[in-house]
Length: 217
Ligand SMILES: Nc1nc2c(c(=O)[nH]1)N[C@H]1C(S)=C(S)[C@@H](COP(=O)(O)O)O[C@H]1N2
Ligand SMILES: [Mo]
Image (cartoon, rainbow, N blue to C red):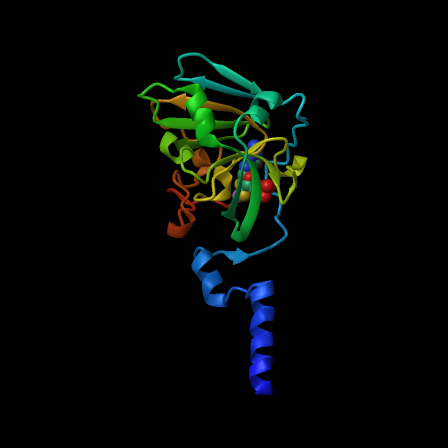
């Protein structure tokens, strides 16, 4: 009898705190060749543009009927969402369950109304960084124009005030200090893509390098 009581108490305790995921469950969320971290490392070209919410602008240009420029107030008026997603860097760290806050990238695509022949985008950072994606990838429900992480405004080193987050691709597709989204008909490889990184960057397929293989950033 007393054993039962103990058992029930233990169960209630577990239910309250939520069981820790088993190693197998974590494995299922960790792409091949990655290890888990919890400290959210910083990775960039080392140029930290000093942009604030007051000076930040986001330009939507290229194959659009007319250019759109958003400032912080305009971004704030769009529907705000919170997402939870995993982040995988090609330098082999992954951080699970990152809590982001921002606006779905698809909201901005709807604002820009790109021409039917616009199948690709280039993301431009204030540090002159670029990266490319198919337009369809931006429309994914987990792709965020993020201005907050872990319940706080996005810090300068992580690309604040506003960055892109593309959970299904390696981190280099998640442009920090987002300055512009350019729409075009043909795909245009970005900063790392012209330096040997894979064009598609799917961590589950280990699309780290194109050919020829070069060093990791
Ligand atoms: N503008 C810009 N965005 C960037 C980079 C950069 O150098 N400049 N580095 C990319 C790389 S390689 C990674 S792994 C992630 C890292 O984001 P974090 O520094 O917030 O961890 O940002 C990506 N976005
Ligand atoms: Mo990276």
